Image (cartoon, rainbow, N blue to C red):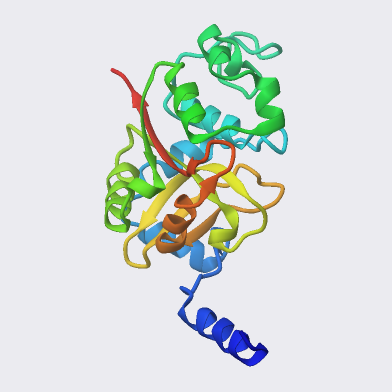
Length: 231
């Protein structure tokens, strides 16, 4: 291929590539307005009240899991220094033997977690968990999941996505979704890496594409989990 033909090919590819919208910070006036008008925001208050910043660079799945357990008010062990008060932390999440059997915290600190490990970790705490990989989820089905789950206060929705596909830097990440606005077709991510990114609204088409990327640790596409108490 000549240099001119290659250049024309790259131009054509750029023209055909889907447009990607920049994430909208929740703290922006427009972001706050979306939360006010959101059609599905049942999880926002409970998750915001128990927000966690991940304890290290690989603990996004751990921090997200702690938010799920605390927001659903699952029975927790005592925490040193807090007297009679009990709640889940990124340290005691792995206290149950069933949880350590899924994956050791030392390994998570080195490698992070796959979608299957996230599902198993939440299930080890007695939750009923549904795992959906991005390559098995159509865009229409994804919107349906968002609308139903985020309007239901009894479950929680975590996404395993590729940051670069939603206009951010670096690779895979896990975080809770807190709201969906049908009018703008955007979902609110409560990013547990708060030292890097704020909570942001992202276009559902971009988020869906990000779930369809491959996690090299598992060799499978990323995706989401829906967790709810068994009773």
